[in-house]
Image 1: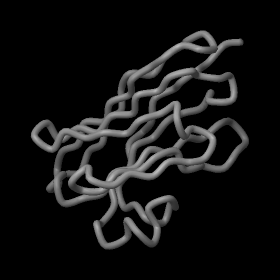
Image 2 (image 1 turned 90 degrees about the horizontal axis):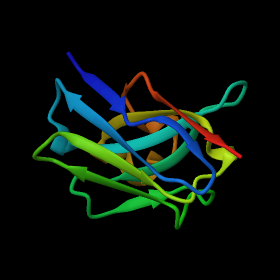
Image 3 (image 1 turned 60 degrees about the vertical axis):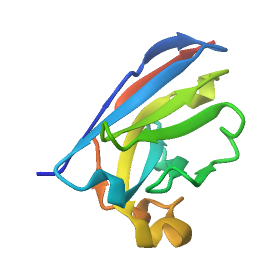
Length: 127
């Protein structure tokens, strides 16, 4: 069955860095767009970054542009989120998601653009 397993979260001081990974299985990874979302307590799930099936295109939320980088390794069925200059407001559970290529342009920044979701990894940034 489809599995998305995130790892790499943790506690970091403001200004620090973390690298999240999401290992995928149970579907043809290279045929899917991938995204990262985050959800803080009491808040809605929000878009962070997305990457096309080939890695040739990516998109970011304004709040993370210039600080976060999404990448993927189709040989390893893994998508990454490199996070630098972390801020306390980045604190959230970070979830990876997989969606059909056909929705990347129209809904790649939306929850509805993705069919499969991981359980998430906690990122906590202390001030």
